Image (spheres, rainbow, N blue to C red):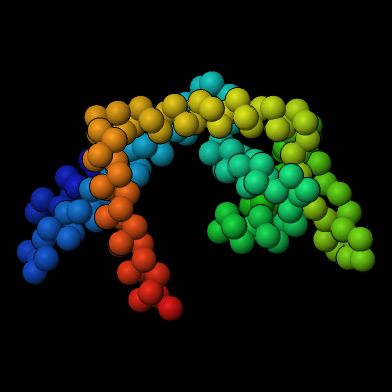
Length: 159
C-alpha cells in the first residue's frame, strides 16, 4: 500500500489538499526511485548509492575529498568509505593523496569508471523520461516551475 492509500482513514485535516499533494509527491518519488534502483541492478549490477557517488565524481574531474562527498550526498563518511572501497576494488574510482594533509585524500573516477558512469547516466535519463512520459512538455515545465516555488519558499523558511 502506498502513502496515498494510507491517507484514507486518517484523521480529518484542515488542509486535506496540501496533505494529498505532499503524499502524491512522496509516492511518485518512491515509485520512480524503486524503478531506477531495479533498472540499475538489472542492467548494470549496481546500486543507486554507487550511481549517486559516481555522479558526484563526474562533476568533479579533478577529484573530491571524502568529506565533501559525504556532505553532498547527505550520508555519513562511513557510508561513503564503504562504497568507495568497492568502487576502488573494481577499478572504477581511485584515491589520491592530498598534498599537505596526510589524513585526507581525493577520490576520482578512473577512465573505466567514467565510461561506465556515462553508460549508466544515458540509461538513467531514459528511465526518467519514461517516468514522465504521460506529461507533455508544457505540463513538465509548469510542474517544474510550481515545485520551484515550493522549494524557494521552503528554503527561505528554513533559514
